[in-house]
Length: 173
Image (cartoon, rainbow, N blue to C red; front, side, top):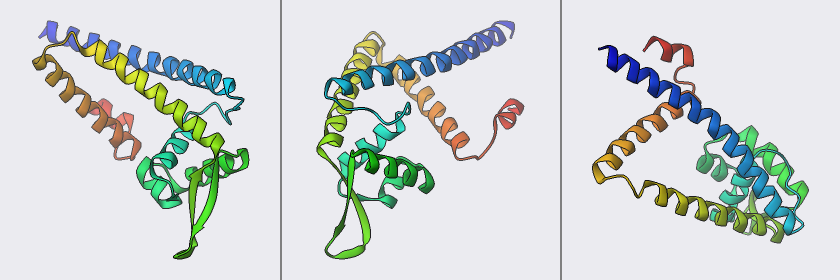
């Protein structure tokens, strides 16, 4: 029993360390992305990668309306309104209307937005290749266990983000 509690404590410490490292990694990754964008004379609009993910979503599904972006990204309408307004102002996206529905506004990428879109896709491709190299050393059984753990962890994170329970509720578990 003592070993199990010690091991769980160790897992928790590793989990917390991973969260902190992920924050640092995300910051470094975005700074690197901004440097790449500057090579193409593209100034990024904020220190937040969410705007780049909105560009990515629009690039994947253009033309796409506001509701479509909200649904694909799982963000609030207010967040998408604010981000899309900034992206429009900075020239990354443009608005249009379809002839069949003059009320609905659709977004698509400008040339500047398309550069960001392609840079982002390339960054994810490189990240994916590094990930596959990293997991190459694990057996199929180990990967299945890791997969179950990751699925459970993502489900838990989604519950937090949806407000189904708070961290204080989690402490009671």
